Structure formats: structure tokens, C-alpha cells
Image (tube, rainbow, N blue to C red):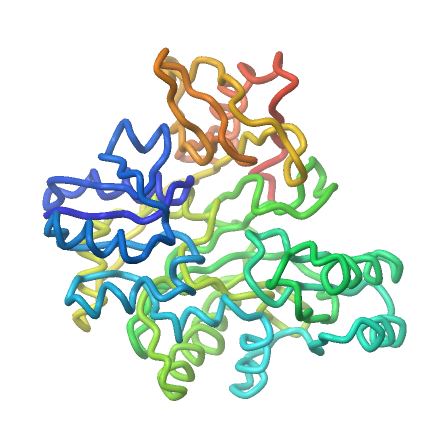
Length: 418
């Protein structure tokens, strides 16, 4: 079986690694892939949103299955284009991916189907948005309506922070079209968790929960990022809250999307928070989350391609999970999530004497054989062990090789349940 993975980040690297475990998969392509993926699959120089080129490649190579990693091609209709050519592809259509593509749509949808979430209002007018902030008061959350690579959310602890965020989005156009409309919602207190599910129509098959660390620096300080690390399972998560999330959030979403004529197929990601009133939705993503995927998929015992075939043909995939703890810590370029230098040489990534796995997110390999950075999040160093403490020890012993560099940074508290 030939499989194409669309994307070039850490999420796609772990998907490739998981596919390599399958006895049924004989060849893996990645478009565009990255330096680490190139060691395990054939990288194709096609951008992840170059839809016509991706379809042509899949037809030429007679690809059996395509798995879409990132959100941008999904919201641009890559699944629709593949299906139009009778190509098997795993991911939601453009109409279904709107649950991530527009926060305003997602909030209105949740309101309509009684799915628990923060109260909100949507604005395109700066003065009305500011008046609402002053009326509600901080802490308050300001979100760009569209896709902003995980960076279009400001958790404002003061009124001024919120007012500045609105100006950045609606006046300064910081996030382009994604920020031409803003969603302002109440600040929810509690512990966050992520829950993915394989979905096809009304069939929902949840995975193991994970927790992501969004803030750039230790002790959850600094700006929001796309994620600085993650761990799974989440020991302090109430099992009843997981069951509630599946029954009262994920299943109603799948049912509601089908009712709206937006039948959902793919991975549905719930970004959730445990409040005093129970779990509530912070956001939905229309694909595997990054970096949580890098700690969830290593725990999956099943053959990933078999799971996809089962789910899309109406069968229960009978998901099985390893009894262990997976933790992953991101190595980022100094300056991330703001501006940062690229093409910085990485130290030797040899894993001898370390029980870790190395996931490449933003790397390329030069002709001299060395890896260089190409993005803000460069690597994720993960470990799967029988205790979280053991996983942390393995990861942080390995990461000391970055301590002499001023070009990279990483959090030293990933995996502690905060």
C-alpha cells in the first residue's frame, strides 16, 4: 500500500513513524515533509496547500491512501478535490473543516446544539468590541476568527491587553484576513486537556486524553504558542469528565455536523477545560493536534492505516492503548512565537544511550549532512516509559545538548500536571 502524508511538521513526522509500523504500508510519501521525515519517507517538493499538484501526484503514483495533517489545506478543500478524483483521503471536507476555520461558526454551532462552551460575542467593529471588553472586564479572551497558526488567541489578564489585542487584529491587521473578525469570550478557569477522536458521520471513537503546554516559558508564563510540549495520559483528569466529553460534546458535534449537511470524516480535536460546571469547549480543530499527536500516537497499539480503513467503512476500530506514559518537549528557535533566526545548525541528534524519540517539526538537512532549523518549533523530544518521572528524566538528559546554545530554548517543566 502506498500512502501520502500531506504536511511538513512534527505531527506529520509522527504519523509517518506510525505508518512505518504497518505491515501493509510499503511506501510512504510526504508533501513537503522535512529533514527528519526525509529519513523515513520520500519527500515531495509540493506545498501542503498546492491542491491541484497534490491530486496530480496522487493519481500519477497511484496512492492508495492520503492522510491530511495541517488545517490550511483542509479548509481550502483538499479532501473535496481528492474525492472528486475517487482518491481515498482521510480528513474532513471544506464544509466540515469550517469547525476549525471559523471560530464564529464553531461558537454559533455549539450554541445551537447546546454544547458547553464560554459565552461570547463576535465583532468586526473596533469600538463595539472595545465597549464589550469594558463592559465584561478582564480576564477575557480575544480570538482571531480565522486560522492563525495557533497564535491568534490572546488570554488578556487586563482590560488594556484585551483592547490592544482587538486593535492588533482589527486595525493593524496582525493576522490578515483571519483577524478581520474577532470572537471575544469569557475567561474559563480550570485545567485544560485535549481529546481527539476518529470520526465518520455519527460514529465517534475517542483516543487517550493529552495535555498541551501552550505558554512559551516555564510555569506557564510568556506568550501563547502553537504548543511547547505535551503529555498523555493525564493522571489528574476525572474519568467521568472524559466520558461526559465524548457523550455531551464530541458525539453531539458529529451528529450536528451531519444534520447541517457537513458530514464529518477525519480526526476531530476537542480543546477542553475542566470547569466547576464540568468540561467546556475552548476550541475545535479539524485534524490531529500538534504537539499532542506526538504523545498520543506512540501509545496507540493499532495499525493506523487499519484504523482509518475501519472507521471510514463503518467498523469499530477497537482501539487499544499501551500501558505507559508519553511526554514530549519542544525545542524552539529563540524568539518564537515572535521573529526568530532560521538556518541555524542543530547539535548532533544521535539518540545512543537515550531512550527517546526525536520528532522533526522545522528542520532541513543540508548537503554537508547537518540538520538546520527552518521554523519556530524545531524538534520535539519524546519518551514513552512506565512512569512520567522516567520519561522526563530521559528527555531532559537528552536535551542538555542544547544548553550551550543561545539559538534555541525549551521548557523544563513539561509533563508536570499543571
